[in-house]
Amino acid sequence: MEISKENVEKMVFRPPSNPGPCRWIIETGRQDTQPRNTRQVTQSWNPQAGVYRQYEGDDSGTSESKEKEKVKWKENRTSDTRSNEKRAENTKDSKDLKEEKGKQRKETIALEWVKTKVGSLIPYVFLSAPARKNVHNQTIIFSHGNASNLGTIFSFLVYLRERLNVNVVGYDYSGYGKSVCTFPPSERSVYADIEAIMKEMRARNIRYQDMILFGFSLGSAPTLHAATQYPVAGVVLEGAFLSCLDVALPQCSIPPHLARVNVFVNKEMIPHVACPIFIMHGVEDEVVDVVHGYVLESLTQTVTWTYYASATHNDVLLSDPSTYVSKLLSFLAHVALASCIAVPAVSAQKNWCHSY
Image 1 (cartoon, rainbow, N blue to C red):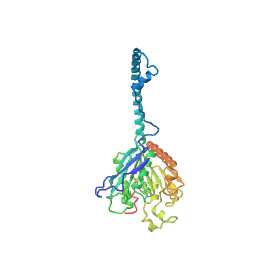
Image 2 (image 1 turned 180 degrees about the vertical axis):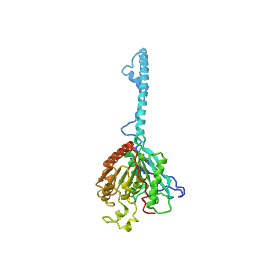
Image 3 (image 1 turned 90 degrees about the vertical axis):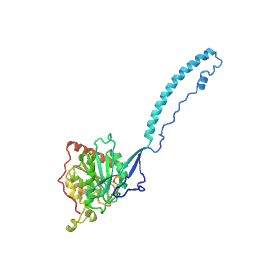
Image 4 (image 1 turned 120 degrees about the horizontal axis):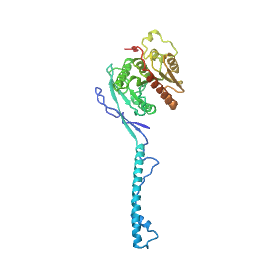
């Protein structure tokens, strides 16, 4: 599978008041249009050659015998022609089918926009999986890390859709990527961003119990915030942290005067998440120590799945793709079953924002 962006960097966007379209082209399948292991089949009939074969070694025959041979040749030719036409038709159908499989499958993904309650416009993409494959009608909402945007994570979103057979949504925070806002990013704006995406998904008639929130690194904070506000089916955390100050001051107790300005405090939110949680972390994580994952696991009050890989902060997937995908598939199957048994609950809504 190859994923190409259609000159995204060179695209001309309209003024911020009216953001223009941005599209990606997803191309799957082989690059060659001529399918492999096939050959061109051409059926032809040369009457002269047919007559010659009929009379080979018998050119001195009588006119009567020649007339009988001609009649016999015409009957054989008619029968052979019908057989050849049928064979050619079957060959053409088979060839068209193989060529169709060999051709690239192109899909245009449009960049869409939604307005948040703080007044910013943020872009998002909705990658829909085929209905026949997405048997549980699940949708993953992915919140990216700090050093990322929608452009850098797009290939990962496609990978999730292709491997997990679910709908996948990715979006930019206010102040990131192609978002339109007049203020710098903040904890409040990040939480407003995911709330806007959740409302947009409901407008698409996607139920909360069919949504799985997936947060990577910084994205773990808006993911947990939304999980305490909406009855979603499940939560996936990768490279999550306890809080920003816990990352900045490892192995230190946070002084009270600094605790008041701490932001993205996941350790306060995760005990209030009522749905199943899947925590993934690299044991060699150089950005967020694996201890953060262990402590978050101990703070959960619900069913918790874990995967501690021999990886750093950004390569949990790359370290073992098959295990990564298989564990996610198992978790998705679990939350699908749990959602069928009982509608996911949600704790009392609370404002987790420490900054204004």
